[in-house]
Structure formats: C-alpha cells, structure tokens
Image (cartoon, rainbow, N blue to C red; front, side, top):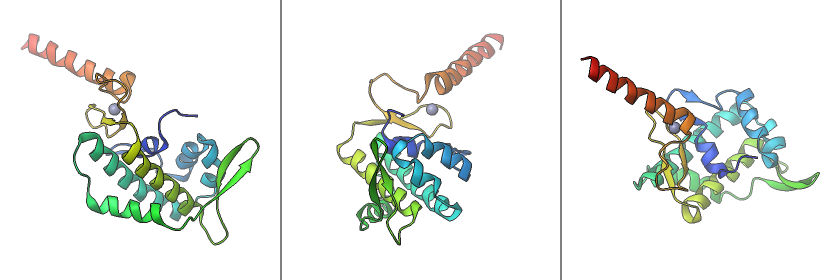
Length: 177
Ligand SMILES: [Zn+2]
C-alpha cells in the first residue's frame, strides 16, 4: 500500500503533459488495485466513468499544484471539486475480509463513488494535510509531501537523475565550446 496521500497519488497519475497513467481502463485498474479500499469499486468503473475520473484528476492536480506553489488555483477547479465533495454520499462502506472498502449504493455508479472519495481526500489534504511541493523536474507535473526542505524531485532516480545528466551535458558542451 503506497504511503503517500491518495489525493497526491491520484494527481500524480498525470505525471507530465504527455503521460497519463490512468488513460485506459487497464491502467486505471492497475492504479486502483494498488489501493485495497478502492480495488472492488475501481474494477467496476467503466469507460465513461473513467473519462469523468480523469477530469476530476485534472482538477485535483490543478488544486494540489497551486497549493504547493503558494498560488491560488483555478477557481473553476475548486468549485467543481467542492460540488463533488459536498454531493450527498454516492458511496457506502463495506467490511471485506479484514478492512473497510468503498462500496456503491443502489442507484449509484462506481465512478461517482470514487470521484466523491477522491475529491473529499483532496479537500482534506488542502485544509489540514502536510505542506506540498512540486517536482522541479523538466516537464514533470508531480507533487509530493514536503517532508524535507531540500527535497527537489518526485523521484531522485528519475527526475533527479535526468537533471544531473542534463547539467553534466551542459558542462561538457561548455568545455568543448
Ligand atoms: Zn518529477
């Protein structure tokens, strides 16, 4: 089970402008399968539901990135997420094996249950969660919990390493020229 807040993990599914890690149902299920409480409901999301969830993800990302940079996010994104978070509970809670999981009530849809849960998680994170920071990697859109003041990368083995390679190449081309 990933340790980062679920709203951060959800926002980070769009890791760069051209990379969407929940762009197909298979990829969405790989993401939701990694979270025990969302596994059953996640597997029930259909293509239309996933399109809605990806739009919710874009709004969550806008809010989290804005907060991490100390800039007020797009008010439209905040308004849409609030509407979802305030919606009368389109979800239930079921005890399965040894833990709770999200369930879909009668007349509900899996995507609405998940969207409500993730919108609420994002609002909670923004109001009482730990401070966030944005990755400084080129093209990277990820945010992370700012556990250390000197942390610059979402993943030092990925974005950090790419930046080191680039600055090394810059130094070399400077020497050659
Ligand atoms: Zn990054």
